[in-house]
Image 1 (cartoon, rainbow, N blue to C red):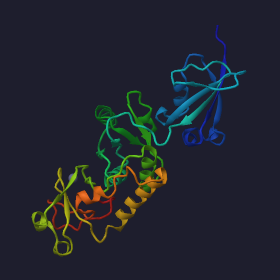
Image 2 (image 1 turned 135 degrees about the vertical axis):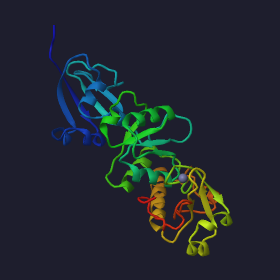
Image 3 (image 1 turned 90 degrees about the horizontal axis):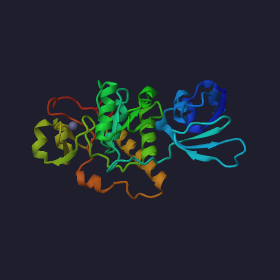
Image 4 (image 1 turned 135 degrees about the horizontal axis):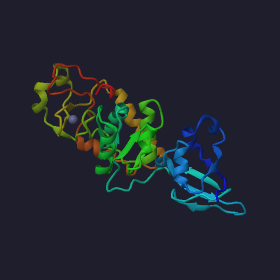
Length: 290
Ligand SMILES: [Zn+2]
């Protein structure tokens, strides 16, 4: 015997952008249910990746309080399910601070994440399957604006990035995962770590103006790019300041932010990248160009 069942889903505000336009305003939708599909399946069929879903609460007719359920729950006739977004900050079940891998469209965000010291894998030609494999193998959170990637069952952990502008995307990721910040400790170009280097070692690579003006340098251990705090780094300094302010606003304290020591340890806050291979090039100080 088959009996048409009907259930209702209500989505928290932060999830409504994933819904079809006709459901967005109310955040809710009633739908028929086959009696066997899981709640997780139903949610994803409406376009909402489970990576974005936090608590699930179900209430049947006559029940005064909701019950917490998992995505594997099979809704029963006439039940109402409330779907919450992921908590912020969202814990990442991996040792150490969260690490990331970004899809090919988020290169500008990748450079910003590295700027504030986060371990960020990015390649501008990585195929979807390769991204998933790297995320799973290295326990990196896959950041993307491609819902199709987040709906892939094999993905261990992913996140949809909010915002159109890379600066907004950066703040969204920092707000979501609250990672410890270590500005100027990672190479924006290749994700390698930066370490102090003597001026005499890099002097031949510098343009005369730079050589005259700056004394503290750091170099990428992976690609040998040299960084120093340049006169044109205002934009990067503002980005770092905005990231720190966001962290402060979230925690109400500077603790755990990794300020001070990170900068002092690096010896210099580089932002004006030059390369060994192109010593004559006027290096850009904007992460868009890095
Ligand atoms: Zn590098």
